[in-house]
Structure formats: C-alpha cells, structure tokens
Image 1: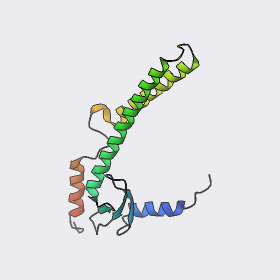
Image 2: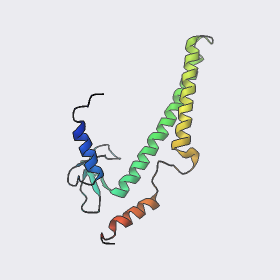
Image 3: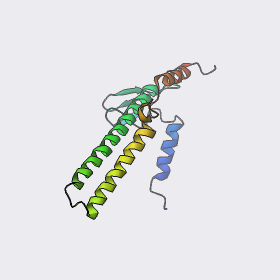
Length: 152
C-alpha cells in the first residue's frame, strides 16, 4: 500500500503528543463537550487543555470525560443496532414470507442482534463495572503522582 501524503507529519504529531511535546500547541485531542480542537496549555508535570469555546480540562478530567463519551457512544451503538434489528424484522413481516428478501432481512437483523450483544457483553461489561471507563480512584492516583516533586 502506498504511503499517504502527510503520513510522516501525522505520525510525528502523534508521537510528540504521547511524549508530552505539544505544550502551547494544538493537541491531537478533541474536546469531549463540543468536539473542537484542544490546545495543550499545561506546564511541566500538569496537563491542561482548553478548546476555542472555553471548555477546560486537566489531564485527569479529560481522561474521565473521554471515558464517559466512549461509554455513551457504545451504548448508543447498542441501542441503534437493536432498533435496526427490530425494524428489519418488522419490514420482513411486510414481504412474502418465503422470499429471499425476507430471509436477507432476518439474517441482517440477526447479525445486528449479535453485534449489539457483543458490544454489550465485551465493551459494556454486561452490567458490571464498565471496562471502557477509567475510575476516579485511578485518576486520583495519577494526579497524586503528577503533583509529587520530581526528585521523589
């Protein structure tokens, strides 16, 4: 596969972000509230971000907000898959029962049910603690480590 134009530039920006070299520049992250670009404003061991609408985040609150947004997106995907499966079955009742179209609609509905089940079971934990979320306790530990003097 041929290399895409700008791939090196993008890879460098992603690497710089992970290595903490984007202070005072636009980060590669988007604002969880509005979707806009986030500028990285943090100094030394404190990460601070702000979007052009004024939403402000520290590194730990951004992680928690990203977890919340991800959880919501997965729940919405589960809901949409289930609703589409129901709608496909409803449409299947309106065509000839023995037709290939009916079979295709039901097969697609079954696939959507399976996809929603997989998302719900594996990404939403089937009702247990959500594996996509980052706990407040873990973020408290991260903040504590970040605020500890560097020579500790």
